[in-house]
Length: 299
Image (cartoon, rainbow, N blue to C red; front, side, top):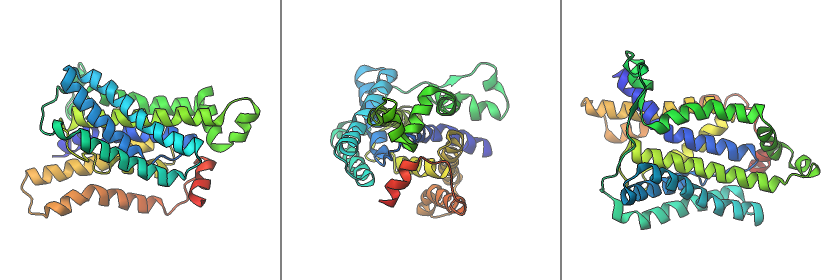
């Protein structure tokens, strides 16, 4: 059962990893985006619907990326150009995504999608225990493995990362050197929405292989919470994502084995797990976050 739970943790956690990485980019620029949930839903529906209509899951993934970025545009316009409250706008944008996908997704409930095929990594997939857990997944899962260290390197070792962090720490410094902090935040928000859309696409076309209304069931919000309590560090974010997905996989395994526990208790297990971890982490002050976010929370 341990192998099955860990395999499910990796497969199911990939969508949260993508959403969380996108949120790290956005928050490093100084903008928090609670609309991540909406971008994930839009990405999931776009990937599912376009995949069905074209017969290509990869065209669907691209559509999911675009859909997530388009919804993030709404957040960017209202926050960066109209000066609206980031938290309030994020919630409204998230609800917008829920409403739009519920409206346009009705015709796709129950339809079969062309899935992203599982790619077994040569030789490594044959390893006992580690093979199924790490090397028998869809291509986007492998991309997420690379994206975590790649984003870490980008943030701390490249000029683009320096500019991104400067937008969140001292936007006035960027303006002095002729770089628009607003433009940097635009790019960061679009990137964050696009990655959330990819996460939704992976969820619909590789993990669950179906579309249903509000199918993300709060994964976008979980991603935002994990980003903050992971200290805006991609590796820790990935660990939190796999922990949450592992709790979901454990729930499914316990139900499949006929454990006589309340179904509602088992369904609450992943969220209780995250709450416990966040409560433990909140005992210590988390440093290293963008200074602009503290102003957001202070109002």
